[in-house]
Length: 220
Image 1 (cartoon, rainbow, N blue to C red):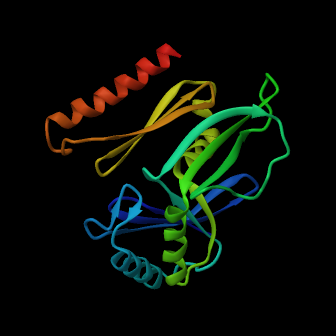
Image 2 (cartoon, rainbow, N blue to C red):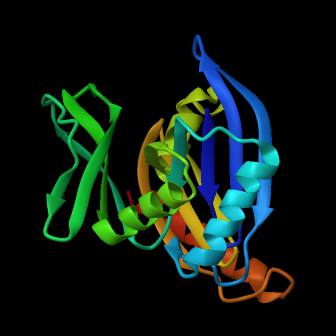
Image 3 (cartoon, rainbow, N blue to C red):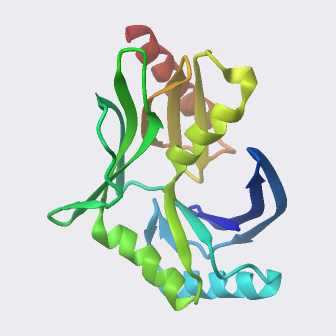
């Protein structure tokens, strides 16, 4: 199977499998995007993006079925919640022009509750990606969220079990911050970094965000 992640300046594709709870990476591919193609997850130049996507698939003979797309962007609101244990609904619910979905992080906590990752996005945001891949003749099996993928990956890293830590992902000038505490996903937020990575102010801005996460964790 193939997993696709479209950032603000490139397309990344990972092929592999998960057999008997073991991850096996077969190949990794990457193609740069034209400047301004994507802005915080929103498709700004569909023609250029589709061309790059199609050429990438043809050049590397990538699978056109069972493809997972991982999305990220300012059009998505993510919040970890604890809810009473209920029978999960598989259907995505709609609220006016919005889509609401969730993934189960921990089906049964010690207090009897269920931990979920709740997601809210616009229908236009989701359908723009569905249309993009449909026009490129690539069948999407799943649309996942970058934070959800991060949670699943961190659960596999035994060195981080029962620890408190933060994960920062810099995508061009957008910094995604995720806080984990005792194996629990606590919060996520996005910040715009104004300074260029080559500027002196870059380290200061990133440092301020790290300090902000530390202070938030102390206050909790």
